Structures are given as C-alpha cells and as structure tokens.
Length: 126
Length: 385
Ligand SMILES: CC(C)(COP(=O)(O)OP(=O)(O)OC[C@H]1O[C@@H](n2cnc3c(N)ncnc32)[C@H](O)[C@@H]1OP(=O)(O)O)[C@@H](O)C(=O)NCCC(=O)NCCS
Ligand SMILES: [Zn+2]
Image 1 (tube, each protein chain N blue to C red):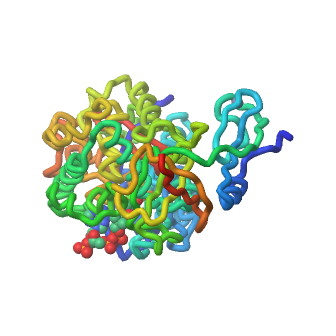
Image 2 (cartoon, chains in turn red, purple):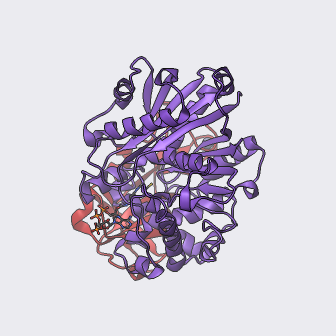
Image 3 (cartoon, chains in turn blue, brown):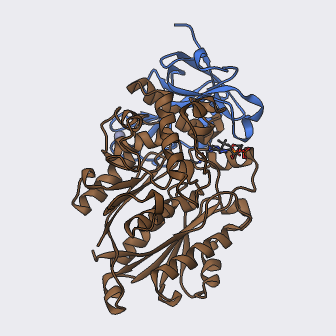
C-alpha cells in the first residue's frame, strides 16, 4: 500500500483514452498530475490514484514553428498549459492551430487522446 | 566557512568551433591556470560542467581533461544541471574550498553542439526540461520560455518591442566582446521581423547554439598567504536553489522561484542589497528570461524591468549594467560553459580587463545562472579586494 505512487506511464497511458489520472494524498487531500511518491504538501507516503475531470482552461501557450523530433511534421501547432477543473495544471498540445489569434488565455479545452506521445486537447465552446 | 578567492578565470571564444569539447576545456583550463599564476600541480580536484557530452559520444570527460593538464591523479567529475551546469559546478567547488576540504579547485565548463543540425540540437535541448511530459507534448526549449513570455505579457502588459530592446542592448554590448558568438548590431525592427521560433519569441529573441569553454580557479586564504599570491577578487556569496523541474505544474509562470531563493541566499551571505551591485551577468537564454531574472533578483519591481531596458538603465553606462559581456544572447550559450563564462566576465571586469565594455569602477558583480525553466539556479557575488 505504501508503494502506491504515480508513475510516468500510468499518466501517459491513461491519456490515450482521454482519461487523466491524478494522485490524492490520504492525509491532506492534496492532488496533482505529476510523477509522485510523497505528498508535495505534507510529505505523507500514502497516495490514492484517481480519475479526474479532463476539462480545463488554457493558462498560457505558444505556437511552435520550430519543433523537437517527434513533432517536425506537425508544425505549426499550439503547445499549451492547462488548468483543469480541479485546479491541477498539466501540459499538452492542440494540432492545426497556426496563429496566436486562434487561441487565448482562458480558452476552455478538453483532453481527447494522446498522440506521438503527447496529450492532445481540443477547444470547447463556452 | 573559510574565505575563498577567485584567482584565475579564462574562456575560449564562443561560436562554431572545429575543436571538440575536450579540446576547448583544455584550452580554457590552461589559460585559467596561467592567469592564476599557479602550477597545475596546485590543483587538488576539479568539477567539469557539461550537459550534452553524449552528442559527441563522450561521457566522463573529467579524467581526460586532468590528463591533458598533466595532473591525472586529481579527481574530477561532471556536474550536469542543464544550462546551470557551470554555476552548479562552481557552487560545489566553492563548498569544498570554503569548508576547508580542499585548498585549490578548478572548475571547467565546456560544450560542443554546432555539429548537430537544427532539429537534432532542438531535440537535445528539449531533454533539459520535463521532456516526457512537456517535450513529448511538443514543447521545444524556446517553446517553454515562449509560454512564460505570453504569461508575462498577459500579466504585466509587457510588449514584443520591449523584449526586442533586451536583444538590441545585448548585441550592442557583444560588439565590444571579441569572443562573442554573434557580433552584429541589430535594431528593434530586425528583432520583430526575424523568423518566429515559438510565438511570441523570434530568432533574435533567442540565444544561439554555441560551442565554447570557460574555466575558473578558486583558492583558500591560507593557500594565498602560503604562496604570497595577490588577493584580487573574493567570493562574497554563493546561493543555490532548486525549483520545480516542470514548468506546467507551477502557480506563477512569469517568475522563477529558484532565482528568488538563490539570490536571497547569496545576498544575505554577502551582507549587501542589489543596490550595491555595480553590474550583473544574468541568464538571458531568451529576451524574456533577462526581464524575469532582473525582477526576481529584485533589481526592478515585477512588471517594470522591460521599461527600464527601453530607457537604457541597464546599458553599460546605465545605472545598473546587465550583461556587459553581451549575455547568452550575443556572447553565446555553450550550455555547460555558460555559468563559468559569466564568472570569467566578472573576473575581467573586476580586474579592469574588459576593454571597451568595461563597467566604470566595477567593484561588486553578480552572476545568475539558470537550468532549464528554473529547476536549478546558482547565484554568486564577487568583490574586488
Ligand atoms: C533559434 C534557433 C532555433 C536557430 O537554430 P540554428 O540551428 O542556430 O539556426 P541556423 O544555424 O540555421 O542559423 C540561421 C541563421 O541565423 C543566425 N542565428 C542563429 N541563431 C541566432 C540567434 N539566436 N540570434 C541571432 N541570429 C541567430 C545564424 O548565424 C545563421 O545566420 P547566417 O545564415 O547568416 O549564418 C536556435 O538557435 C535555438 O533554438 N536557440 C535557443 C537555444 C536554447 O534553447 N538554449 C537553451 C536555453 S537555456
Ligand atoms: Zn498531503
């Protein structure tokens, strides 16, 4: 039980089906989507893993025109940081966004799948 | 803690080199030994700062470097903290000498990446961030700083023209540095019209991929006295902090907590405030990074640094010269060498050897070196004796 932790592949594999896995501290209820064994807030070593909402808002973003390896054929696209409804921040990308005007801070988005191996979001209407 | 002195420092030219990282580290170390006025045998141990050795298929560089200097018995290990490798290596050496364990240490930063094409280098550099999440979702290294830039612009109304002013100022300074990678005068318009790398950052907002090496030698007071060496520069403060290795999990995207912590530690040790600084070499891997650095160091209030740059307050003849060397932007950014290279600039400034970019009557200088998006930060403060 005390070996419970959130590992890289737990997070990444769940996103294939648009699912976001988070840890939650059994003591202080702190939550996050990050590779974690000990609670960031209180140091407790007992974490529960649970599914959380995949809807959130864009905190900041960039339009990538020069990309790293797996993404060379995808440019331009948006790389985004998203704050989910549970106030947890995660990272992902939105294909086919080619200019900054097509996105804005505060835009509502939803995780749909993972691809190459990043987490793909899509824009939602308000 | 014992008093520690910076006794020698030297760097190679930064840019595209035909030499290997191993050759470059040897050259910089040789020159540092010469200007410290010591024998190589005086060096008891060394740290090498190097981030992308595997790009040249060479790890474990330390012993090879020590052998080239004729001191194969001296232990040497590599310190890797992405772009903060140099500052971190210097800090670890400082701890060793200040604690009295060693009397003399050599710190050498080196990097060779210019043999990689743009895509390969962009991919290697992305490895320095939270690659499995941020890089694998498409963020390049410039992309991470672009996201910070957008957050800063949103929060404080910072403009692309103001960011461009940082690049113009650093290129102006680099014109007076014959070892700088990009010695080219540019205008705000040139920056705004340069190709977009990761919006809002453009080619001229970014530092280049550079090769180069830099080396520094530090020694205890006892060693200086025993050998009758002249004490020129003392290390007044050493600050080091970690921060979240991921950008996306942070509360504040327009500030680096590790800079705040490391600088307060260093300033506290030195017993000074930023107002006492005569100049600073800060980590301007992108124009936005220099703005955020000045604000987190406390030189300007949040949201005010970019205005100060436009007003010329950070130029070499301004109230607080920032990056007189040209910074990462113009001088170049050979990743492992950068943090040590900042210290070479401080050495040259405090010994009055900076030629046309000499800061008038420079007495106290600060170096600020960041790894990735702030996962590592090292700040050092030096004073002319
Ligand atoms: C901006 C970037 C993508 C350009 O890639 P690159 O492989 O250097 O580009 P090239 O070699 O094709 O250079 C094209 C031209 O732009 C110039 N150039 C390259 N980088 C430059 C820069 N940062 N500023 C100004 N000019 C630059 C080159 O000199 C060259 O000019 P030339 O054709 O007249 O010789 C790359 O330099 C980069 O990503 N920089 C940031 C590095 C980084 O993230 N460092 C870690 C930060 S902590
Ligand atoms: Zn807890």
